[in-house]
Length: 341
Ligand code: AHM
Ligand code: MG
Image 1 (cartoon, rainbow, N blue to C red):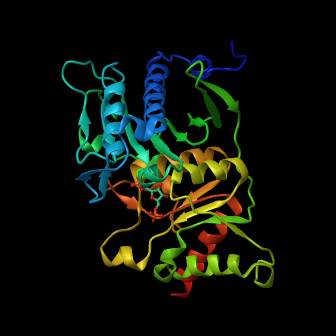
Image 2 (tube, protein in one colour):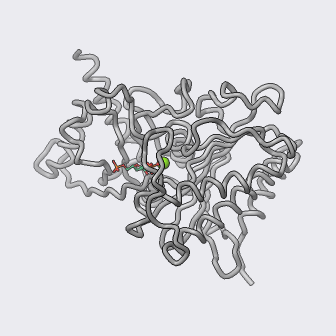
């Protein structure tokens, strides 16, 4: 017997607050939760079931796929295609959108997801996660064309992630704050353990892949150099640094104790015509929604991520998110550099 609120109970109680809610959305979230439980189990078993290592294939972004990238993508498709809540899905691991097959009814929502973010970490047994975002299908349902997905992040209905770490957790927003649930493996249920998660406005901890330092733009160089200068520098305080190479784990840390996470655009990316590393639809938008709902901020350095009008399903964007005052500082440095130019 548990004595907490299960995620199902939580979602149903949220649904009751919305006049005219049909239960469609609640049911969709339940299917996503089931998919994440299956993935949690797969990731947890690891080499016992032979799922680690490379699949020897490439995804649309030219990245080598792990076996788990492909398997977890399948789990998400199978869990979410049958129930009649969606008209299409899009995934980091698939070139094209996935229309709900003809044998199933189609519904009014669209789902985008990164089934296993940070998957390079699976082979070294470090935390990974699943990220998802729910959009409403514009106009008539059953219109699963690419254009339907080209909505800015502000139009997301819900976003969340599952973190497969020492505990498996699910963190969710439906635009009414952020709540965290921990999977109780014994009863197979996510239990509300982290109600109303908020990000402190100030932080003394930053996360960035510093091996790219020589390619960064001036405002990011300036910000990180000032942090590194510590008590002797303009900030007058020492900073701490983290880099897990798993965005879900970084965002979770920031939701727990604050911090700033940056994957900025750099000269190396610009030379190849890319605008960032992380993907707008599967990573940047859902994480921005969660971070903003928890009181944090999220920007490319030049604009609010959730206001970007998407041009392409697999579009990449610079990401600077976390504690509000620090994000605003980095955005301010970008503005100063632009004004000087
Ligand atoms: P992935 O979706 O292919 O796993 O890539 C996204 C990941 C993020 O989770 C993480 O923040 C970043 O890539 C790590 O990049 P790097 O390898 O440059 O450290
Ligand atoms: Mg990813």
